[in-house]
Image (cartoon, rainbow, N blue to C red):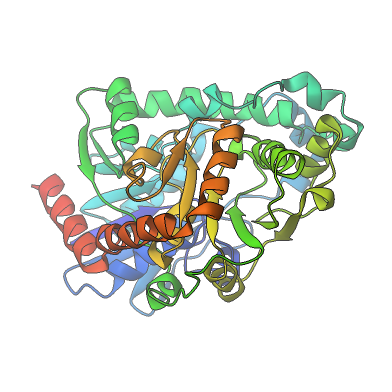
Length: 420
């Protein structure tokens, strides 16, 4: 069986690209399949330099050259102002890959990019592996009390706005991608997903799609560190960890507002570490100005991007993992905290209810539920054993949910079902 994967990241081709948590699970998925004797695997992606087919350790790579945006800066800036996305003419490059490799099945990671367009130009069956879903993401793009004007008139975003890299330009681009995503779904026959929510969204766009439940493969380091968490006692300082990207709807404002409530209304001693953001990030500075707050006065520490080992070590020392996002499907960060056995508090948005059974394997709170998060933290300070009991149950579920052998067999079954 020949399987061709199209992905946004240069998975396993440029290892340095995947040092952060963002694309690591795609590489983990490829690792899962590449040692299968019955599968011949190829991976294709856009690349700023390379364009030649390469075989390495039994895996075939098809980098698709995408010229640097710097080659025509004026055109690029104007395009960014308008939120321009890739032209479908680039599909001829995808088709060249298909014709050379001659796959039995094509798997596309993500419904939001242009790769699913290949389904209109080939008779090879295409299955889209769902990631984020841009239509509901765009619907929840701006947080409470925020609009494009908050960022247009923010001097901290002046340069970004002039260059078409500001928040309002990003919103236009996501809107255009969301329209394209909806078109993809209309023509799509097969989808792989992992939450009740992504199944619901998929079926709303196209009730006739064949949907297959496939759970997520985590990075190898998390399987190696199962059962290594020892924090079971309530420390004098509650260590809270959150992992988010510098994205508007990931809830950085919720962290600030929650910490403010903690600081002003309780006497708790806590430290809130945020992985994935620097204190100098424009988004952090924007909300500090808008909310008139300072992170260091709220016991918030921004750790930036961490290497895998440092990332895991920070998680293992945490007493609570808080996920404040306004929208998400099945965030890797929550799954990673669960499989390590860390108590999780998360906003009940998107697919989170498929990961957390409220009051049994973690705590679910409303979107923007700052008061509810504070209440959970206070309850933890009074009876931490309840939260560690929930974390133990969540870990049991996560170990089963992310079982590599189970996922591998399910993926093979899906391939065979689609091809037949």
